[in-house]
Image (tube, rainbow, N blue to C red):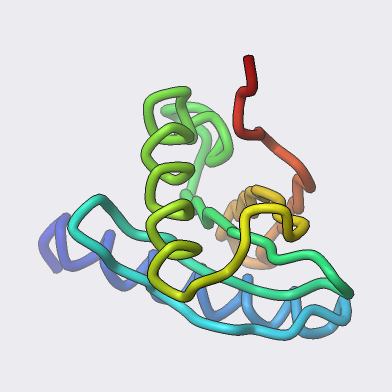
Length: 125
């Protein structure tokens, strides 16, 4: 299997694991793989009264670091911009509670899932 196809399959597997994990924790999945001209958000979910934008990162080993380390500042800014686009598109008021989480998955024989709540936030001046 070529590397790109392998990465796509890994990503799909990770998003399924993450969705299942979130549902077990009481989250309601609103949308998966939201795409706009700005970017993509892996999972949009609701936890009680908070809208949660979730970035899922997975790796099969740690040769290039932990999966969560791939959510760089630049990636965070793209997710925030995409989330703002989503809120505008869906006419959701920005005074609603929102949060940005990261789910880091190390896929081995037994997947290791780390859920980082409020991994980053919109910077205010």
